[in-house]
Image (cartoon, rainbow, N blue to C red; front, side, top):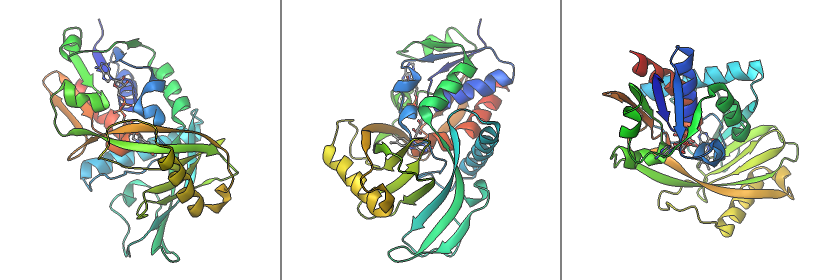
Length: 304
Ligand SMILES: Cc1cc2nc3c(=O)[nH]c(=O)nc-3n(C[C@H](O)[C@H](O)[C@H](O)COP(=O)(O)OP(=O)(O)OC[C@H]3O[C@@H](n4cnc5c(N)ncnc54)[C@H](O)[C@@H]3O)c2cc1C
């Protein structure tokens, strides 16, 4: 018999499963979809606590995750990279942001109009299709199974982790969970090695995240749309904004674009124990950023 069933095989479920196994638990993951079909596999997956509140718990998860990814990058874990990041700001800032203590050395510099400042720091990035494959191999015991109710899992294991992302809203009747549509474009990397962000762009959130052979151009954060219908005009606008931000992208070949629904939860992610269920869902646009810190917390809650 298994000690823990983790329902959900995205980045939150798989990292939790790894931490539980490291503490000696026998773990089985039930996942409705292959890792490649999850929201996690679509993430730009750059460390940054996107649209999270300045909450001490979030700061701890973000710091622990940052440190873990730095360790994994040193170790050469497949799919992990470190990128110098230039985050451009459009409102005068005299102080470092609340999340800066989690990100090692963060420097606040001046910047040219229309920007007021730039934050310079190093950010881990995970090439998710590869990284999820590595996590999956590490976990080992994954079954393709869609539950209609978490009771199916509690009937088979003494502890259940609910890491079902957006589906958690329905599975545990949490009305605070809702989709926020995100659109990214993948282009060939013309030789870039710096991440650039212009989150406050009035035309739409804009970012350029170079990976090993391609570059992720973003983006959108649309809470009015819960569909994943293609939108070529939106994709073209993303490419135009990204190219204006990083002119070396001019003429870069577009490979594909895709749309994912972030599992946002009003008030932040729910990571807490309720009877024999440990909930871990609602990480919105920061699931990679908070993953390992949350996984540690899930393991503590599950094995106390
Ligand atoms: C365009 C875009 C860009 C992003 N960029 C970043 C970024 O740069 N940095 C960052 O930190 N985050 C980013 N994110 C956010 C990140 O992708 C999410 O926070 C993260 O993937 C959530 O992980 P999860 O494991 O909770 O959910 P998911 O990846 O959705 O996994 C949920 C799992 O639950 C399973 N499941 C669901 N229902 C059931 C059921 N009934 N029975 C069994 N299993 C079930 C699914 O099959 C899946 O395995 C981005 C998201 C998008 C869309």
